Image 1 (cartoon, one colour):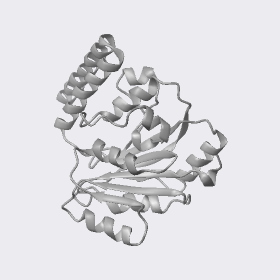
Image 2 (cartoon, one colour; image 1 turned 90 degrees about the horizontal axis):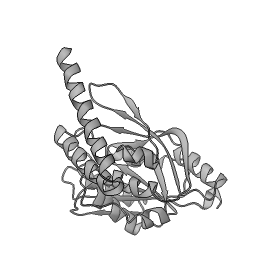
Image 3 (cartoon, one colour; image 1 turned 30 degrees about the horizontal axis):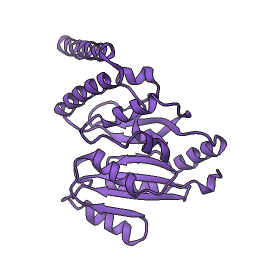
Amino acid sequence: MGNKNILVSVIVAVYNGNSNHYNIARTIESVLNQTYKNIELIVIDGASTDGTIEIIKKYAKKGKISYWVSEKDSGIYDAMNKGIYVAKGEFFYFLNSDDYLVDDKVITNVTDSLRNNTDLDIVYGFVEYYQKDKNNGRIVGDISINNCRLGLHAPHQGTFFKRKVVAECNFFDISYKSAADLDFFCKCSKKSYKIKDLNCVIAVYSIGGMSSNRRIAFSESSKIILKHFGFYWYLRYIIIRNFRYYLKKVVEFIK
C-alpha cells in the first residue's frame, strides 16, 4: 500500500451549514487545501434552506466535489451512511458542517502512517473544540472496550476507518439521534482490529446544541452500554453520570 495510492473518502454531513456558527465553506476549504491530493470529497446535505446548497454548487461546478446530494434525511447518521454507500475510498473520514481539519498536512500525516503500517484498520487522533464565551479544550479518547464501557470513545472527527471496518460494523445505527457514534465505536472495540493512536490534533469543531440534546445523548448512551456490555456497566454509567451532574450543580450553586 503506497502513500500515493490510498484513496481517502472525506464524507461531510451538513444541514443548514451557512447559519449562526456553522461554516460549510470553511469545512470544504479545509479538505481542498490538503497537501495530500488523493481525496474523494463527498457532501451529503439534508435539504438545507439557508444558502448551503448554493455554496456546495459553487464548489461542485469547479470540480472540487466528487459527489454531492441534497435531500431530506433522518439526521446526521443517516447522512453519514449515505456518504458511505457512494464512497470509493480505502479509508473513510467524517466531518460535520461545523468541523474543519486543523491544518493542510493532516491527511498527508495520516496516510504516511498507513504507508508505514499497512495492516492498520483504524487510526485516530484528538480534536480541539471551541464554544462561544467559554474556554476552548481538547477531546481525547481511544477505541478500547474499557473506554467504551464508560461511554467514552475517540471523536469520530479524529478517526479514519478502513472500508472493511465500516462494512463489518454495519454502518451507523440511525435509530440513535445523538449517540450512534458510541454504538459504532463499541462494535469496533469488540473486534480484533489493528488500531493506532496518532497522538496529534486532527480537527477542530464548535460545540453547539442544547441541554435537551445532552439528555438524549445520555439516554441513548445508557441503552448502548446496556446492549453491548450488560447491566453492571449500564448501572455504573448511570450512577457516575448522575453523580457528576449533581456535583456540578452543587459547585455552581456555591459559586
